[in-house]
Image 1 (spheres, protein in one colour):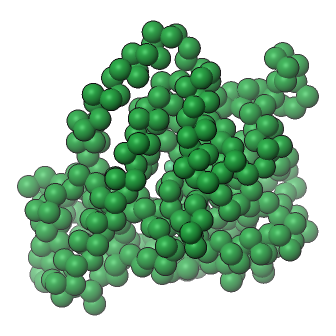
Image 2 (image 1 turned 60 degrees about the vertical axis):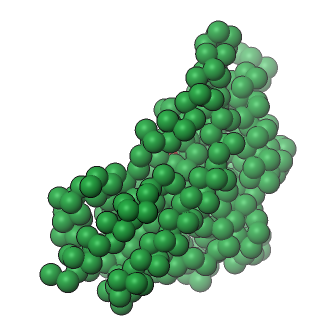
Length: 370
Ligand SMILES: *Cc1c(COP(=O)(O)O)cnc(C)c1O
């Protein structure tokens, strides 16, 4: 049996008939950059995320970068974030010239541990960038309380968390900015790179829109320096079609996660592997991540059985070569380092069949009983 980590061809087969006419419509219009499709997409995503505004950009990475730029964050500033994330989070902070300041994770959720943040706030701290890893939101109440008390901006890295909720509130609607990615492997992916920033603040949304077009307003007059961060109409059209299916896909992912939980329990494996802990009230399972013994061996074993897995992420940010200048060493963020050694993501995409899930769990059982 073959079980890929993600099966985008299966997803496309289900929406091909809806996608093709809208792509043709954009091609016929020859309106490719920003324009009506992008505006429609921004309205739809803002509504989906319970936000007043959304600004379409070139990627999730650029969503983070342009949010930092909108706050004027740069050299001399510090931004607090998690070391256990995709590179773009810390990378975008460093690209502004600001210093990424890491705070270790809560080992249960893999998200930044709010209890450890306050000790890292200095006179230079400008922002906190929590990441909603794997599709579950970070513990936002204490983060917002701290940020409001200390006058800090909160930029949610919600690239893996569209539609995720914390105490009934959507990802991207709690902080000052919500940064989303339409990279194909995200829960709402387009046909290339794309992203969007959500905000409830009209002034911030207006500034983001100016920054994504080289800081020009009116055209050819630049009061600020921006970049080319414009979302294109083909990607916006794909997002609009897929958005209609997103809640059904999320239900599929959640059902697959529950099914795995039950299969692992039935196989008597819950003392050997740590299942994902659902704490926030709407986990959208961009990834279903286990903690396992002998992780690398297990991953190879599953690969030989035709099962795709992935390690998100093998090297925490504080141990990346490019961040050596920050002066960190092994042991600085033990929970992140432990998670990087012990976790593995299983296939959880909506189209995953019963037999495939059973095969994955049987194979893990076989490995662990050897
Ligand atoms: C995917 C991702 C990003 C970057 O998004 P791109 O669209 O690939 O640039 C940023 N942060 C996290 C946590 C991600 O998973």
